[in-house]
Image (cartoon, rainbow, N blue to C red; front, side, top):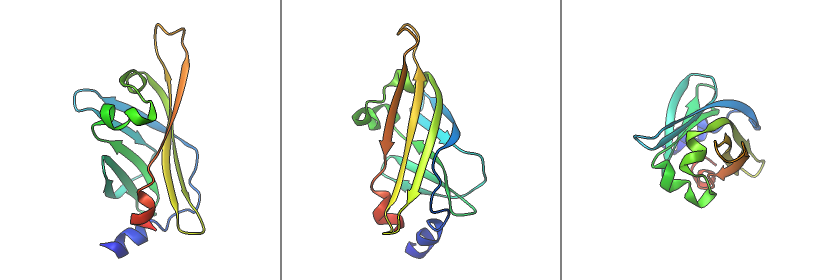
Length: 130
């Protein structure tokens, strides 16, 4: 329902940069990125499931078929396996545009402990929640 989705998008105007928990289920190929909080509902956009809190904030993302879906963002299975931390980024702009994305920090063994960062943006959410 459009009205319900509109209400879900009415949380903080800026919810950027909170450190989150990250885990990867290799068997089911699902990447989980979550902040603390209770989930009121979910919104599915393509291969992404956004978790919405009771305050209307996006507090989590599940990426289904992650190894395939995140290739275009240069996120590899190794990055997901060895992810050390993640950052969930959500912004609502005055024009109604909503940006949802995340960063992953991975330290992959046998690569001289190089830290790799990747940023993923989910642009389709603007048309659904705006």
